[in-house]
Length: 214
Length: 214
DNA sequence: TGAAAAACATACAGCTCTGTACAGTTGCAT
DNA sequence: ATGCAACTGTACAGAGCTGTATGTTTTTCA
Image 1 (cartoon, each protein chain N blue to C red):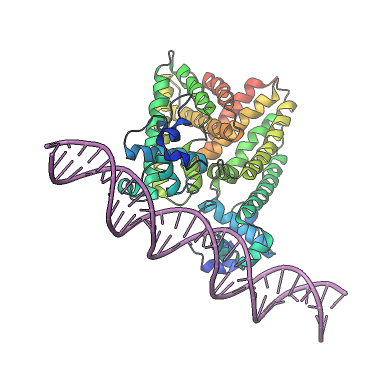
Image 2 (image 1 turned 90 degrees about the horizontal axis):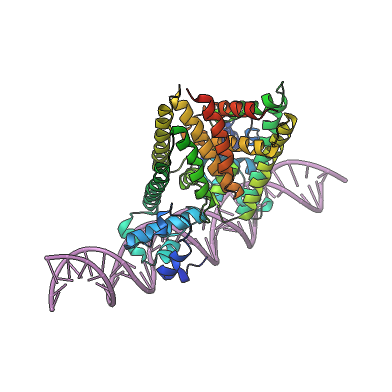
C-alpha cells in the first residue's frame, strides 16, 4: 500500500487515470466529498469493503477524517453512497456505449458483451462492485442488497425491452437468460483475470438469440 | 445471532441439518477440529469472512478458543482450511450426483444445471464460497485465489472431458461457455434468491450444445 | 489404572478500527 | 473587510478482534 504518497491528491489519482472511463473515480474530483467518494470507491474495489479502513480512505483522498464524517454519517452510509455513485457512472458509460450501436435489437444485445469486454480489459477491473458487496455482506446490510437490486433492475429492463423489440415470445425469459450470461462473464473474467470470457458469453448469446427470434 | 444457545453443539447443528447434503457442515462432526471447521463454514457463508469473529466461531462450535488455535495457526489458515473442506465436500456431492445421470455427454452437461437448481433451492445457499471469498479478498490473500482456481479447474476439466466425448470441435471453448453459464446461474440465483435461474441457464446451454454437436 | 494428550474456561495483552472532539486555518460571498 | 461555512490536523475514547497464557478437566489409550 502507498497510503503515504497518496497524501498528494494528484499522485493518488494518477494511477487511476487511463484506458476507458467507466469509473467515476477516473475524473479528478473537485470537491472534498467527491475526492472521498472516489478514493473510497478505488480502495473498496481493490481491497474489499471490510478490509479498507477509514484512515486509508482519508489518506488517499487527501482530506481530514472529520470532513469524511461531515459528509457521511458512518462507514455503512459511505459504502452505500459509493455504490450509488459507482452504479450511476457505470450505467451512464455502459448504456451510453450501447446507444451508439447501429443495428437491430439483437445486434444491440450482442454488443453488450463487446462493451463488457472493454470493461474487463481495464487494469482497474476487479469484478462488479455490487456482486462483490453482496458477497461480502450476504445477510448483513439489507440496503446494500437493495442497491444491487436497483442496479440489476436497470440492466434487466433494458434487456427485456430489447427482447420485446425483437418480438421474442417470452421477453422476460430472454432477459433472464442474458442476465445469466452477463453475470457469468463478469465473475469468470474476474477470477481468471481474462477478459476473453466476454466473447465466450457473446458466442453463446448469439446462438441463443437465433433460437428465440420470432 | 444465537451465539449463546449455540453453545450446545446439538442445538448449533440443528438448523443446518436439512434438505440435501452438499455442505459437509450438515453432518454432526465428531472431533473438535471438525466442529470448528463446520461452524466456521456456516458462519463464513452466512455473514462473510471478515464479519465473522473467532469468538463467534468457537461459541457455535462449542469449543475453547485455545483448541481452535491448536488446530489452525491463524484465522487466514482457518479460512483456507474451510474452503478446502467445503470444496471437497461440494465436489463429492456435485459430481456424485452427475455420475448417476443416464444418457450421453450432453445430457450429463445439462444435468449440471439440475443439480445446481437443487443447490440453489437449499435454505442455506448463499452463493459459492469461492466466488464470495475472491470477492472479499480481491487483492489480499493470494492463496485464497489459488484455492478458488483449483476448485474451478475441477469443473472445467469435467466439462472439457464431456465436450470431447460429444466430439465438439473446440472442447475448451465449449467448457468455457458452460463455465460462464454456471457462474452466472450461481450469482443470479444468489442475488435474486431464486433457484429458477438454473433452469434459464439450462435452456441456454441446451440451445448452445445443439449448435456445437458434431 | 494411570499417564499422556487433548480440550476446556477464562482472563488479558496488544492492536486496529470506528467515530468524536476541538482548536486552528482556509476560502468565499456579500 | 468581515463573517460564515467548510476543511484541516491531531489526539483520543470506546469497542472489537486476533492471538496468548494458564491452570483445570476430560478423553484416550496402553
